[in-house]
Amino acid sequence: MYITRVISLIVILVCFSTSTYSQDKQLSKDGIENLLNDATQNFKLKNYEKSLTKSRSALKYAIKINDNNLIGRSYNLIGANFDDLFMLDKALGFYIKALYYINKTDNNIYKAKINNNLANIYFFDRKQYNKGIYHYEKALEHSNISSDTSVIYFRKLNITWAYFEINNFNRGLQYLKFLNQFKQYGNESTEVTLNMLNGVYNDHINDTVKANSYFLKGIESGNKNHEKFDLSITHKKYATFLFKNKNYKKAYENILEFNRLTNEITDLAKQKKTKLIGVNLELDEFKREVDKIETEYKNKQKLLQEEQSRHKKIFTIIVVLFLIITVLFYFFYQYTKLKQKNRIKNIQNKIHQNIINASIDGQESERKKIALFLHDTISASLSSAGMHLNVFLSQNSVVPDEIIKTKFILDETHDKVRDLSHDLLPTLLVRFGLLYALDDLCEKYSNSNLHFEYLNTISNKKRYTETFETRLYFIISELLNNIIKHSDATRAEVSLSENTNELVIKITDNGKGFDIKDFNFVEGFGLNQIKARINNLNGHFNVKSKINEGTSIKITIPIN
Image (tube, rainbow, N blue to C red; front, side, top):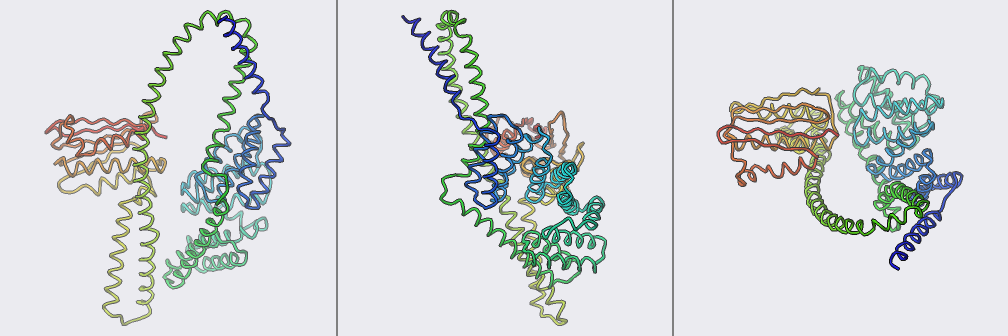
């Protein structure tokens, strides 16, 4: 009786699971194309909720029929929605997935589009100019295959802007010449940018007359065609040019116009986001659901294949299953108990790690916000006030002492705010990377009583990810502060090297050392917190120290 019930249960489960999966709804390529067309139309009409919903449906069905072209286009359209809503972190993730799938096809039009979308985020938002240029050049490469001259013109415009932004005028000039020669292939939008780029280049070669003329043409064209973003950048570049040529009044006027246009763009972004207020579709939940679609479908397909295979073989192996079912049940029961214990332990570890991660991320986020606020708001206001005083001083030969003292106080305050901003988020770290910043840190901390030696076998031009560099910088900075405060050392050494995709950092000093088993010492130096932050980077942290024999610290972190 027991055997019969077991056999019947197995057969029923196999048949039920097979029939259940066979009933999954399918949609043809034409149907998916229609969904994507509807989603695209809603996107153009700024109806983001409908566009995202239809895009997600198209993605789901595209994955079911395993069509890389439709999958890539669906991900790209989802990314474009988030991009248009100024939710660029979410957009970046979907663009990366889109490029992965579209690269498996011969669709050069979308290869160019997606590379260009990625380049815009890396270039304008993340300021990762090398990545931006890489994707711009990829976009141009695929556009050249399609031979669409207007698109090629637009791609070369972006590349020119990118090279000029990093002051590589030699590389950018060849593209600028093409733009000037074939500007009939541009449009009202590119006209503003082209004049701005000509102004920047002529400023570089010190042709101030031409530069001034091009900047004014760009502003005139932007005002005429209502190109707010390109116009705002043109005002900013023109202000820099005017300030360089000591025309402070006009420079200030253009800075004000830049700020006004930037505020309008920001308000427009807020207006777009308010269109989703009250809508059932939650964007974060949407992202999680889209991320699950591919994984869930693959798991379901795998399970379906297993169930179908099992259905075919079930009658040949049913006797064997019965013989081993008792043993399997016992081991399964033991395995389940062990798995539950491990799961509870993993959840506890994960919660603890999440708390640490949240604390670290929160500190870094607040540090960055404060630094940016000091730099972009307070420092900018002080600079603006100083500019007013400069204009006033240049226009008046007799100036009261109070005005001169006020200017001195403003300059001093501006320097202090700038120094504080740099301490919170060092400029060298942001602009030139971790290796330059550490070299500068060692030099800054060295004095007549304590010398920090900096040894580096890696090229100073090498960059890592922004998060990676920021976290490592403040970890090392904290360790150097410990040496200054507690070690009584006269010499310390910081060395960096790479070893098989790992970054190896060694910090040693000839100070008084400490007993690493003494909990109070370890806590006083904050080593446990430092170790947790290194663990968050999947790294290893080793401390060796003895009293009166100095301290040696080795950090090994995988390079992302």
